Each structure stands twice: as structure tokens, then as C-alpha cells.
Length: 169
Length: 165
Image (cartoon, rainbow over all chains, first blue to last red; front, side, top):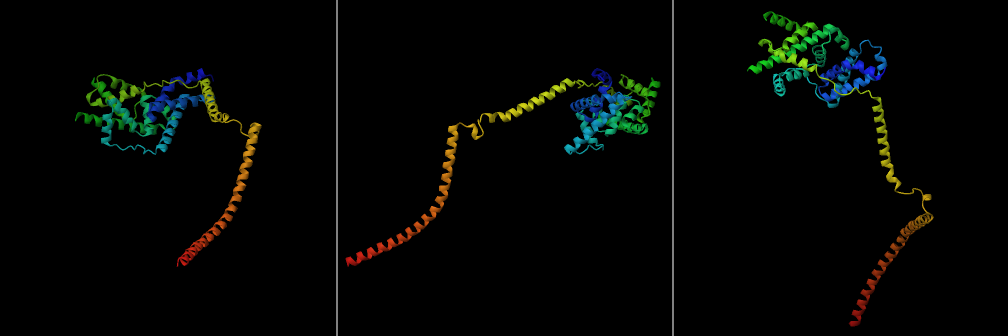
């Protein structure tokens, strides 16, 4: 495979790889580094790529695994306490004050979701993949995906309605 | 308008249960990105806005496949290592010859003479240590002699006394 062919294959979804990486790693720089490494890995395996029917799904799976590994090793290095998912109205208020506007606030809410839910919201609500594709990428069944997605959407809605209420007071 | 709102309310409920299709979700997005959202649904707006804004983010860096570039980097690192090694070895070049054979005959002779002299000195030092012992003995005898000399002065004092009397 020539470089030009490879670039043509990768072009349509490289932004999706980057956005998923950024969803998980949060920082833009880290997401860019991760995307570079993932694209380079793909290029090194370009002979295998010709055998894959769905390079995009394969790449998204790779991105998810790569970023989760990176997060794990980061946590091991920093001995950071993993962000737990309890909801503390004070801390969410604090965060909302930090957020520039309500759209920023959504991204903060997303940061607090469990990794699995982040990935699913990213793939469904932002990238608009159908459930069958997401199931393939994450190696999960569609029901489990729907359950996680529903939880995530409800969490986001609750936090938004709560802060909406605070706003009125 | 009520029909639309009714439909949206149903859809949003399905949406929260993750039961909407992609088409229905597109309808919801279109509604919430529009300017006339019902007041009681207002709080959904930032969520759909955020989703559509997030999708616009792009990876702006190059696709890093340029193998020539990576080869260049490899050569740069090889060159860097070479420069480092030179840095370590160059100072030693100024220090001149390292073995005896590298010196001029005069220098060699001087070296050998110095070596001999030092060897002699060191053997003399050993001798010196043993002669110190002799000295010690001598000093002991000196001390004894001094004591005797004291006796002598005492003696002379007494004789002087005797003579005076």
C-alpha cells in the first residue's frame, strides 16, 4: 500500500479518532500525541489493513484501547485517586462556576462520567454511529450499550436541570 | 406547534431511555439548535449544542507517515551520539603520549633516573628507620650521661663547699 492510499483511507475518520482520544485524555496535546501514535501504528500494519473490512471500526477500537491503557499507566505513575462517580452538589456547583457557559458545563459533566459511558456518548451522540457499529467497536452487545447510554444521558440531564434550578434561585 | 412540541416531548423521553433511532435523534438536534425551544425543555439546549460543537473539532496535525523524516531523525540522533563521544575523547588528545615509549630518550632517561633516585630514597628511608633505633639507644645513654653530669655538678658544688670551709 502506498502512503497516498493509506492517507485516503484514514482521512475520513482521523478526526473521529482524535475526538475520541480527547474525550478520554481530556487534554488536546495528549489527544494529538495519541492520534499520531495510533495513525503510525495503523500505517505500520498497513498490509493487515487491506484484510479488514471495516478499517474505521478497527481504528476506533484501537483508539479506545490505546487511551484506556494510557490512562491506566498515568494513574499508576501519579498514584492519583481515581475520580469516583458520586455526585456532590457543591463540587458540581463549583465546576459550573468555573465553566464559562452552560455549553462548557456539559463538557465538565461529561468528564465526570465513567469511561465506558463517555465512550458510548461520544460514539453515539457526537459521532452518530448506529448501535450495531458501536457494538462491534466496543465488543459489547447492543442492550448493554443502550443501558449505559441511557444512564449517561439521564445523568447529564439531571445535572443540567439541577443547575438550571440553581440559576433561577 | 403543539403537535411539534408533543412529538419532541415523546422523542426526548425515548431519547433518555436510549430508544431513539439516529433519524429521531437528528430531529431532536434540529429542534434544540433552533431558536424556539419550549421553556420547560430549555435545559436540554446546551447538551445538544455541545454535541454539535464537539463534532466540529478537527485533528490539525499532519498524518505522521513521512518515513524520510523519521530516517532524518535517526541520523540526527546518530550524529548527536558521535558529537557526544568526541566530547568525551578530545580532552585526552591534548594530554600527549601515554606510554614510556612515546617520550623522547632524554625524558625517558630522566624518568628512569628519577625512578632510581626514588627507589634509593625509599630504601634509605627504611635504613633510616633502623638507624632511628640506634639513635634512641644513644639518646638513652645521653640521658644517663646527663644524670651523671648532674652528679658531677653536685659533686663539684660539694667539693667547692668543702674547699670554702
